[in-house]
Length: 359
Image (spheres, rainbow, N blue to C red):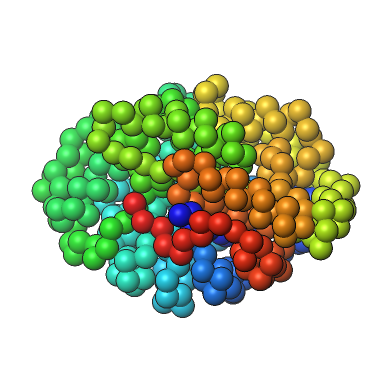
């Protein structure tokens, strides 16, 4: 069974860098409405990204963002079933502080909280606040994140932690009360080192791909990395949906958005991803795709799933059938309209739908 999730628009205009796509600012009210509608249609989870600096351009894309951790704390008491994932980076949180914050949101949500852990790749986001360790961090970021996560997990399990590593040291540190539920961990590492981190620490791999072939290849690589660990992390696929009455109607929306592509924001995105000196992970792949298609307004040079409700359902059913796929994360051009159309017109056509996400 596969659970569907929504990748919340905590940055302005979501995942389309265009002057002619729906324009909106992020807010608690908007995201509350989105997640409540998602819960109404039995979405299993919602995830909020972390972003400290945007890509500029005429639309000031992602120059306006809201904090994911406090957003999820605010959404917890106004939802009942949907699982809520906040993104954090070890460069801006101490692991003990993060552990206590997560335990509190877990309590508020009744055990529906999880964390998406990112190592931190965007130099400009952290350098502006004096938190960038230097460009050599690109080489050891997953070692840093591994120590961070070790302390997180031991804090939750034991309520007291002693650890001395290369990057973190805590001694007889009390971290009480312990969380009532199990706090799942997601990570999007795409490099061999990133996959090893997922194999050792995470429950789900986010960013496994948007086509059945990509998801199958990604999950197979993750399983090879997980061999011998005694762990079985699952994968989250992802898809941006452009839903129309017909395939042609949806294609016209894509054409409209492409005509308004924000060249300045796309250049800003390319520049930021190009800063990452790693050649094996997702940053390099995104930079290459953006460079090859600079008029593609969709985030990371990606290709949305475009069509009628039946066309959308056919694609998602193929994704859901790939072994190891536990969830499919969705984004929309217009989130309110998109979730309503998805729930009313696409969901009845889907196979293998599960409400809950569980490790």
